[in-house]
Image (cartoon, rainbow, N blue to C red; front, side, top):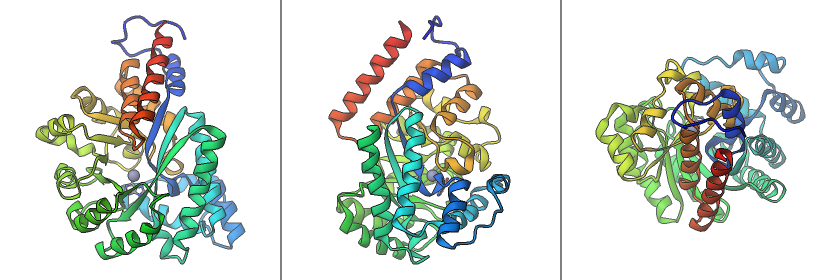
Length: 351
Ligand code: HPA
Ligand code: ZN
């Protein structure tokens, strides 16, 4: 890689592209059902006899124009209806791993939404077995380590969350953590305090979506009522300077998803995205893709889009990659190993 002088200015876009693709990194905010590309949706729809509301992939992509989170979730839950068997979840996960491997990911933490499958009569076991088998195969074939995180749907009842946690207890070896997703506004984190307490008691890691469409106060509430170690999104944290200082001081990782935020109108433009301001304030920000099949880009696309819009330097990009490893659920020794790889990569790029 050519030298680019002092790394305080935005660098040449091509050099940024190579640098971003090559740097070792982790993806920490990825809904596996949101990686369902229209082509696979149509193929699985045909195979499983499930009607898909699009004639072809182009028509699906043309329909992916969202005004807010709810309008996305409507298509997201509708699209995933083609996922019925263990094999479907395996193929879905396998496709994602190949894409993220090409993006330089060394580790991924994958969300899944079991309640959205149980309600359609798909057994919990088919979902977990299919995803887990593909993650294990991906580790062997591609060297990508992984963790699986089960999300509770916050627009369903806390009782429903307790029921699905009960099922997950039998899969403690395959499921590393619990999360909280779906429609945020009107569904504050505190509603799920009991199920998160039970999950943490059972040894699950805890994360939660907060401050995507909901206010900064939901981020605070997720920290205080759910005791989460990471906040998914956290965009609105920027509205509360005391919260920003707290996130910095407590080293809370934010798993931000720039293209998702743009497509759902969480930000009016990427230039307005608070990612760089939070990074400069010392918050452990990361870049992720959320639901890449719906939002027009995988992991590297998100890094590149936000780098271009906010003028990120290679120093910023390396910080984002380091944060993704440091904020992962990996054991300390593996985190140290990957962080050392990043150091080596950065040093070689500067030479
Ligand atoms: N936000 C909340 N819930 C979700 C999302 C999201 O971006 N994607 C899938 N479930
Ligand atoms: Zn998400």
